[in-house]
Length: 341
Ligand code: 13P
Image 1 (cartoon, helix red, strand yellow):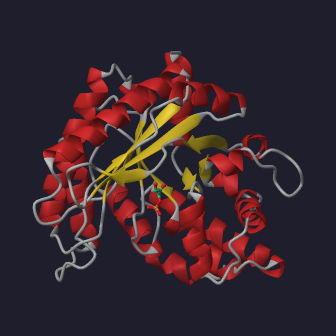
Image 2: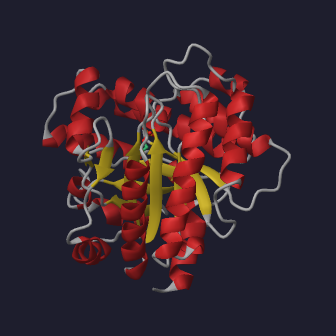
């Protein structure tokens, strides 16, 4: 493990004014989103869409890294350059999703455990050769009646730690993503409790596996009301409780925290991040973003699978990247949404 390489990469990933573009949807998830937007679900359209994202002019002013899916890191851009190489040339760090997805947890109805540890050391060697500088593994924790169970939190935290140790062994910065899902009618308070329990277990397992905190990024979900909770917490409440939860659980040595958007609205995800960065607190880590839907949604809809829409779709991506970049500095204002794309 080369600590200096890990530290340098991790620091660049959460540079102020920038964040990470998550574009690592599995083929299944990508197709679900394509279908909804009326886009043909083919390999050519997937390549064309990912090409659109990474060739957006000016993207590197607000985007520090891009997480790719296995299919994409093996593909070329439409101009014939391998995706990872193209991205790196733009001044954006290429990353790779390495987990094999969340599967049903045996004996625990309604709960998932993320798989993908088998053969991971060898896959890291391969991804590194293809140009990856960092990696991502996502675990999901569901809130519901009587869940999450201790077994679910434990199994996911352990797998995250095993993954993170293997990533660092290969000198790739692990993004450790324990996502507490927004689905359900739970309150903000319940989300706080579950997120705190999850993060405590995750950091205990990471320590147990000898992971260097300064060479990793935490991809956290925000402490937020369940999507169908009748009482929705406001922006300031989400910001305050999220930061309080992180301060109670995340070691100060961690290089940075990049939030996922998790089904929040695009403007909402930006407003929450901004509110956290406006708080008059000195935090031990930069608070940034690693959004997929909150960055891509307007772009995907504007593109609709048609070449003639590429330029407008790219403008919309740049706009969300710019607003979220501003939110890492606490400089986003709602009025900015009125600016024409
Ligand atoms: P969302 O921002 O759409 O939640 O996606 C982030 C991500 O990478 C999920 O793993």
